[in-house]
Length: 580
Ligand code: HAS
Ligand code: CU1
Image (cartoon, rainbow, N blue to C red; front, side, top):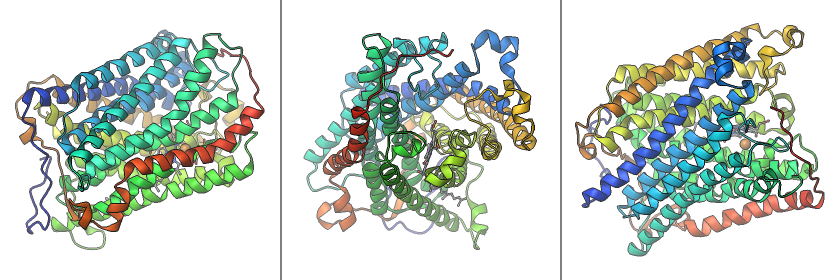
């Protein structure tokens, strides 16, 4: 069910087989730590998404924060929103990715890693999460997921967040180190595709995370501990968005790995071009980070020149996603035609829409067409004034991180958990219902929110409690209704999904995951080959990831150095505020 049978036509290039692991205890431990990451991720998502409908109802004009049951649980709309954003956008993603992008390259390269260190990293990351969770739950870090100063929370929140985010750098170290060992042991060989994509993404994240790590460790922790009298909000915000834009590619590239490498197999098709895929990931490595000022067009003390440079670089960083759209779209068409699809659009019906693993990811992609187009609107400094800080923005990110990332991960988990545990998906029908309703719910939510945003309804506001006159004159009755309805659809979807997920996790082991749910490698129409000497120019140019990593770091320093230097020259330290 999860993997289509080989194509009727003979394969030109054999499908990659995952290198065998002879040490069963080692493999079991590797799978276990991956499973811990994935399950922790989904527990965070479960709590996070249950708060989601409360936010949607708020934008639908229903103030559920007045209801006694909610009032007993959550201090305010803003505490609910902080939990929702942190758990879904920061915790779910990072834990899922840390498991997924540790497991994949290790298996792809057939290398051994130090399992003690892998477990240590998981424990440190979880400890950081728990530390940050305490003030969040106690309404002592109601700062929203961007924690902009001068809003101030308890020091424990910043310390926990620093430990959680910082520990992802241990995964970077472990994966890059393993890849370098593989390179030494396999001179002249081309890095296999899945490992290549994972290593490039981790390298990008290492450069990206520096901003937030510096912000939290050097500025916010000393400030929240009272060691320094104030903090410069603009410097903090700029360091935040150094990480904050690139983090969206840290969220979406792990889904791209699946779209490129595994999705064709679920549909019985082929990867279009491995060299092109490598190019896409190298562009992301080089260009994901030096674009963050597109979040700060409205901010003072950043010259228009730098705003425009970052805008131009933002348009460039849409290019690898456009390459992905055409390349993965072609892989789907190839699959559908191999299944007998005909006509200009008729082939689409031949795709395996009833397979939730497949449909979750393709529905995620379809919603991401709109999400990506909206991103390009946000990036234009001329349009930004219309949409910035309005409900349009949460509309945008629910059809990017809420689908391209989350819905893809939901689909991936449906084969990954059977693979890791030998358990079986209890019901493909319920799983399908959950992913289709997630897609519909997110699309309706995004429509309602984009629409409200165009009328200037602000984001991050308890609009349901605002003075009626403020919004009474706006013709937004229909979009607010859409948003409210979407919250209910998404609640149903989440209940269906978590029912299937937990029934699977709590069931007994029945299969050997290695054979019953193998890693779904796909055949490639244009593979990269195994030997660098005979590989194409593109493969040769993209292979030296260490050098490209250094270039990425230099580019960020060039694109942020002058911007930050001017801010440090005009530093304005202000004391903290508690607005909650
Ligand atoms: Fe964004 C704000 C610009 C992508 C997430 N973004 C946000 C925020 C989040 C977020 C969370 O320039 C809010 C931050 C906050 O709280 O303030 N974004 C962009 C641009 C892109 C983009 C240019 N965003 C993402 C992704 C995200 C994400 C990915 C998460 C995963 N975003 C912005 C800007 C802002 C912003 C401004 C600040 C706004 C403001 O004013 O505050 C690009 O990377 C998008 C490129 C994508 C495409 C689409 C490619 C389509 C593909 C699918 C193809 C489908 C197929 C299916 C083939 C060009 C790959 C075919 C189907 C068949 C059946 C055959
Ligand atoms: Cu951004």
